[in-house]
Length: 248
Ligand SMILES: NC(=O)c1ccc[n+]([C@@H]2O[C@H](COP(=O)([O-])OP(=O)(O)OC[C@H]3O[C@@H](n4cnc5c(N)ncnc54)[C@H](OP(=O)(O)O)[C@@H]3O)[C@@H](O)[C@H]2O)c1
Image (cartoon, rainbow, N blue to C red):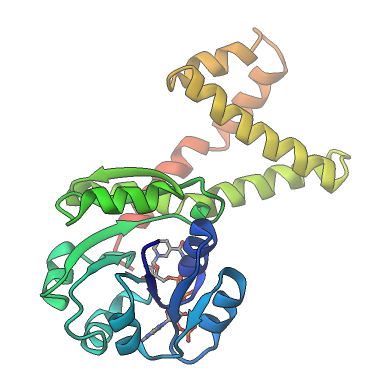
């Protein structure tokens, strides 16, 4: 088993650790979240001691905030193993400068890694691609992309769990308004989302075939689809993509 060291024990670190389901070394900046995390998955919390973590881990997974890159690298000084960064917007070149003696990889997982159905984007040119693909393949799908495509890809898979949760919540609310119990509406929405994803996959991505298969001429689905189109579903998704790519 590789000794994984997580620098930072927040939302992404926890999702990854739960997905991997094996003991980790973990640090935080003083909140105690590292101790809470190792209580769930096993391993050892090292407080804020990134230097000791770097001495003991074989793979460092950077799960702190992007702006802390240089400060954390100074603490982890001289680490010579594999550094995997999940830091949004941090490039391979920046990682190589911060960790000159290490192999470096830039990845962007999403929080569904927690249930091993995540999508992890890997920046093309990352070091140790086989090791990175194996590690993140354990918690979902791995897609390697050139740097120029990572922003757009993050605008789908990185942010996606939040979009799908918003969509599901609104759809459940609509069901409740129409008279369903919340628990029933939740089951219907979640199983319809999961089943339809499988169906579209079985049709090799042919969304139109799936849509046509439900839509009788002049029928209920056709009226619902028209209402969704009029409400701007497609333009909302384009606007959301543009918003993720705009400067904050
Ligand atoms: N959330 C997502 O969906 C997602 C997706 C892809 C990538 N990411 C990336 O993942 C990173 C973390 O995001 P998050 O949502 O997990 O943030 P978060 O919940 O705020 O967690 C950040 C963690 O980093 C710790 N930390 C800060 N400075 C540290 C230091 N010097 N040494 C050790 N630990 C330190 C924090 O410690 P305390 O607990 O003491 O505050 C906290 O545990 C970001 O770079 C983000 O771009 C997030």
